[in-house]
Image 1 (cartoon, rainbow, N blue to C red):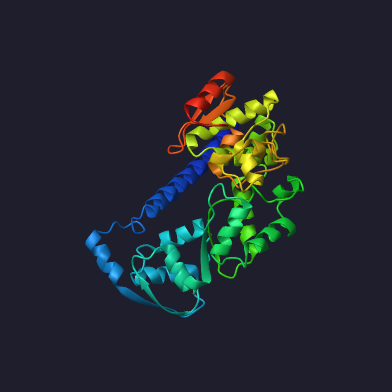
Image 2 (image 1 turned 90 degrees about the vertical axis):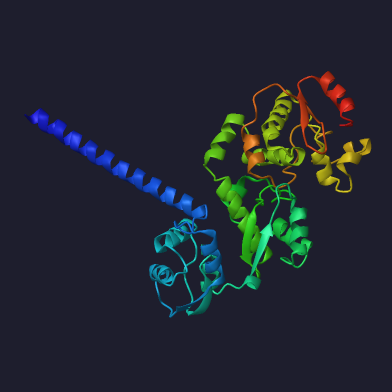
Length: 365
């Protein structure tokens, strides 16, 4: 009898745990499903006919906030007045995106086809002229970013931004493992789309990019674990990724190029990557690199120095970082650009085939 009670208690405990876990799984799946439909543009769960949608888009709704309403009350009021179709899904999207909902008192003109972000922008009194949208491309160097920001009037001039990168202090744990050197933030200003206040300082912009890198390459996360499998530090990974970013345009070829780099490093061969020469010799062009360019003294010149260059040569994107961490498995040691138009490369482990391919595809290096 005593043994039956013990087993009954165990069974009841297991049933409770399994039941609770199942409920959480169902809840998570339901939220994911709802959000998927929402993000696909089903008007917060209500599919609207095209003509009806057009009518709604042309109708302006006067919406008044007295001030002090909770986000739930604002969402319910938006639903009641026909601005949104579903208050719960409106709040869910704000929750998922960690959106600011400190709405300001006032009277606003809204439309039923506005996105959550557009509604938030208006109710938060964020004017279009008060924000700036920045598109930092994969493969941009710090100099490229500085020039781009100057062209957008996001910084006073390129030199101001570069000086901030090189001399200001930024408190991120991952930067502690980056050696002190010139161009110390090269590789770590993550390429992405950014929406910032128009009065953002160079430090604000840099912090946004470093924060994004920290989110992508989280210390102790999956990327950090992969470092051990290839026996490379984070800085070495980002350096390899930056070379891949500059050498390879086709995403499917990036792991193959990573294979070549890792194999050459293991074999003690110079990397012989033109991209590293172009980094320090900015007056040279890829299609016009001369022998004297390859012989120039620089810690970034992988034609005269063994191993990796001093540091990253650009700011790589996610695909290049993952390729650096997960190289394709094989014995390739060389690659040659086949076509400037398609960006395709020829890969081989044979020095003889490599030389023949250079002749066939009209490449010098």
